[in-house]
Amino acid sequence: MGIIGTWKTQGAKAALVGEYDWKFLCTPRWPFGKKENKPPPFFAHDETLSLSVSAMIGLQHALTMSTNIITPALLIFNVVMSYFPEIYDPSLGRALDVAQYLVSASLICSGFGTMMQVSTIPIPFTKYQLGTGVLSTMGKW
Image (cartoon, rainbow, N blue to C red):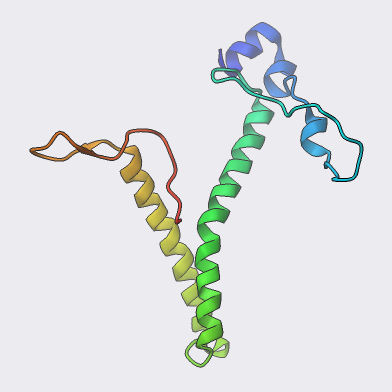
């Protein structure tokens, strides 16, 4: 139905906030606390989400993807810095440039990998294609 259809049929509150259990999302679960057997909220395949739930899930997804792409580049940079401190002297200012380059290169390579995976480019004179045509994200690892 979509957010606009929900707004017209169920009102503004259902379209913007929805019926989501925000207590489950925002309350920490302590390992030695009171055990609740309540499962997390489940969204069906074609279920209409409210705008706030969609924004929260989208932000979580974007932060998780960018963290998983940037972290390996920074870890490799720190390992190289610890083994060769004389080459990457922080007082020369080259260390920050190298770190920025590695992060940029990992983001660009992830973008190219995602474009290749999402597209369906036929390979000439064969029955094969490059990519799956399925919307997915390719990370560094």
